[in-house]
Image 1 (cartoon, helix red, strand yellow):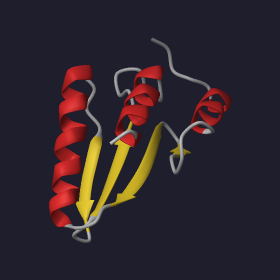
Image 2 (cartoon, helix red, strand yellow):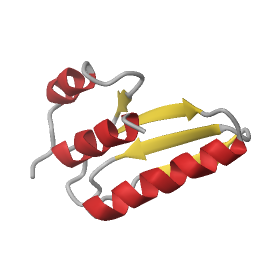
Image 3 (cartoon, helix red, strand yellow):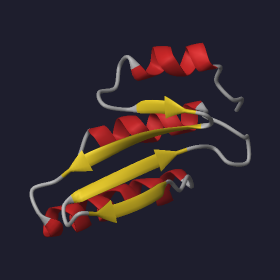
Length: 92
């Protein structure tokens, strides 16, 4: 699996709402109903990430906000693996 070019990432993100590309990753902040929903969301993301053997950076802040940052570290940038996990995360 190879790193996507900046143009390829931009094109892929056109199909995803709210994701941004910076440097070697894509990220999105989610605002949930409350803390319980934020924790539940993180659990869902964790389960899917484990299934894909692809683990994002996850930050829970402000009691109901979760930031997800995806990058394929061993490849040094964004790959199809990141786009696929972003699509799954958006489906929750």
